[in-house]
Length: 397
Image (tube, rainbow, N blue to C red):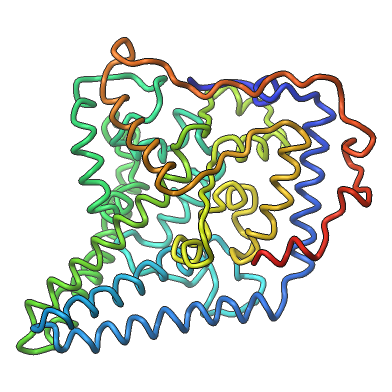
């Protein structure tokens, strides 16, 4: 079910909510003040790695007529596309590296290797999704206009096909994302500005044309007699990237524990309440450094939603502090192994393909009411020796 009051849901007092906001503001300030050469070196290393993988994959595919070369070239190219989309493109367009004032790695200039124009992505994702996270009727990422992901969303016979729609969305995720900012519901109801729609369709058409020309004509043609083998490898690489991006994004928003909200929550919402909604509406998953790298650090989805424009390589460090806040204030911190999170997502998609009367309501219950108030060591705003962040926290990255 969708909740309408984040304070009531968490059983927190007004003072505690505002104190949480101040602590999170302080975390942001600490990271912003400490950004430097190490962070710059990190993103430059990742970009260099991605480009080497892409070049190695393209070169290997010159021999794509031979199955081992096809497999290796496809794997290398898939890895390059995943890195470019997840750790580089997505995070760069969030402005995570704008502080470097490098025009080549800046949110205003980056155009990523996928079919959706960066300008439209930054509107539908950076603004709409991150501002209105999991608010039904505002956040179009709740089901992407294709899937029913909440019992509060009206069921229609169309939803019976959700298992099929979900599989198609996973395979062709970049195409679903490309159409995302069009707002299909607004088009259907006649609320979409025709001039804006025409402009957006032209942008998408231009971007799709460039992507198709690159992956399905130019690069295959360069490999001469291996044209069709390279073409199939490029197509497969895009599918692999699509499925991976879909799974990572869905695991950050739809496992058990990720809460939905009604429009009433937005009324007079404070910055601190916005923070709480981000924490409650997102979910993390656990894994090693390679998994987090290939997922764009979105295994720390909670931290990303709190601080979408802070460098992604700092999320592991920040997660230690955010989890501590959650523990002290009794706020759920949703996390688990990737396979478990995705299993819960699939179960939700399957269940919500049926009417509510046919399925059990397994909505995430509110956290239990707290017994008593915070101790002196936990009191809002206090950072004693017990609560002070240490350098050891940074050692996890």
